[in-house]
Length: 247
Length: 285
Image (cartoon, rainbow over the protein chains, first blue to last red):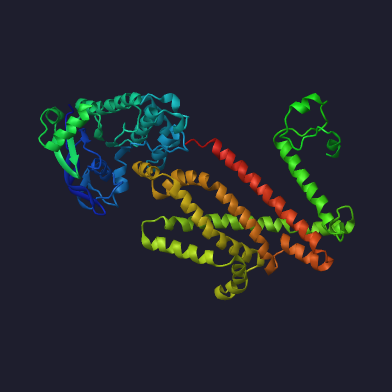
């Protein structure tokens, strides 16, 4: 387990509505520097909305979110996004740019790095996710697993403090899931603060410091993995785990 | 090309089966498949058109535009003298209307209802005014309203650009909306500003998709530029009108005018298709 430091993300009573539908209600969560949190729950339970609120892809309607001491609002969103990377289910790579350009766009435009420096950093990152030979290719020329590793590298290129993963392996063929999880585990070992929405329970067991179970927009259960998997307290969580681990 | 018609095995166009050709000794200028064949087809079509036309009436007077006589040459040069103005007018107008169209499209995509309102009012109003009316209004009305002197060229450019910008705005809006939502989110997640997101992520993808529509608009502007002749702009149509008044040969002169526009527009279509092909070849989706 990671040695936990001071809280880097504080969510208090966060709510988010889409029309009549309450996607999040009264969610509070505190994440320490270097901590790994795995969020799970049935679809529509608000787990994606939860992490999308942290980098303001969704604006929360109530409660407060504080990232590294800065209260999240429209005004501070850009500043906070520089510290918070996001990896998407559908990768969302830029199809008209090469892998290298995907990685350097952010650093050059928002961190004002000189091109040569950004490219050198990008190459190092591509080695880290084990696809240095794909730098000049376009996303469509890569496999799903490779694309997602580019997605991870693109987030890392911004040198974030926190990485959010929104079901990073859900759109992948089974044989490609392992290569992505492997990269994520290495990242976890390097001390990165991570919040991961996933159904990969093996990964959760190996990596998570804490499990969060969401249902109908609420945080139903929060426990270290050894407790979470053996003695879930709520019925809903027990049913969910039985379904997801049963097959 | 006439010597081809001697051979009974002569194919109609370049797409004919190659077997028949293999048996024949190679002809000196056999049109090859592909580009050569296309040129051959166009040439045939034009020749056919010109041969058929006199058959419609016995009263043609091609002498007015006969390039072998001095007066025909003078007339042709006079007609072609409008070409540069037509091109310059259309190019300037389309460039302005693309920029204007984009500037009008962006507020239309905003979450702010006031900005969207501005977009709607502009598009609906401008789209409702007939181009000819707009040309007349800009030339005769705008100088009075705005207290400025305005020449025929700029009056034409303004009217064409305004009129076309409403359509460009709708094209841009559709193109930008066709780019997946995830692209904007990815751009935001790496902290790109709105301008950078548009410039580096959204517009490059949108423009590839709307290129055929932009090509159509260019053809549209090129053709509509003929209306600027009414305020005295010396472009292709105005030149033709003026020559008709002195030569009194409308049929022949307007036929030349039709061919002038046809040539221009075929050129544009060819250019747009080439551009599309080039962009498609490095588009990887």
